[in-house]
Amino acid sequence: MSPKEIEASSNGRTADFGSAYEGSNPSASAKQPVRAPNQRAELKPLPMPARFLLVAIGPVQKGLVSELGIALQQVFGAPADVGPAQAKPDYAFNKDRNQYHSTAMLRRLDAVRGRDRATPVLGVVDVDLFIPDQPFVFGEADRDARAALLSVFRLKGSPDGRPVAPEKLLHRARAEAVHEMGHLLGLSHCNDFRCAMFLSHTAADADRKGAGLCGQCKAAIGRP
Ligand SMILES: [Zn+2]
Ligand SMILES: [Zn+2]
Image 1: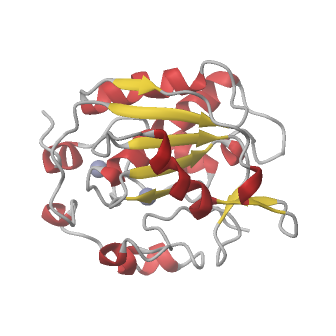
Image 2: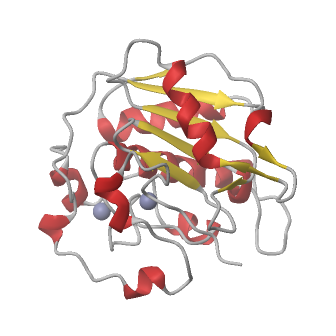
């Protein structure tokens, strides 16, 4: 089974991004044409928001969410507030799959923002996420709704099945949090495997990259 991550939601509200949907099979990204650097932000990048909002949904390792907020601030330059932790997402649980429906959770993230709709929100979960056509997803971003979801569930393990060291999990989670937020800011996937916008197919891919963006991705969102 191959880990996947998608960059467009499947709820129909992000039709502009529909063709960018990926992860249906292991060769999908290999067949993806190499993008020229000036297409890195496929859509017009959004102005940098004044702040970000992060929330834990269900039990998440203590301190992790605030660490991810620090990573977002370092990379994007805007502070991240940690919102009130949300209840375990029982409403999204699918007992046949023993997984949680990512898109259902994404829809509810809108509500945690209150009236401040312009603030990009990242929900952090420690449950196994799926969308109907995929075995699982690491995360999902809905650019129009300015909401994204990141699961650390599959970032916690090593290939032999044992849990990785906490600092390694943090490294992975930082990179993937920046990745999801990068999508909300208009960035697409990057071919540089060291860049946070590189698409991780496995947790090991997240090991190779850092939370930082390559020069071209930075330029695409107007960061120095
Ligand atoms: Zn992505
Ligand atoms: Zn890049």
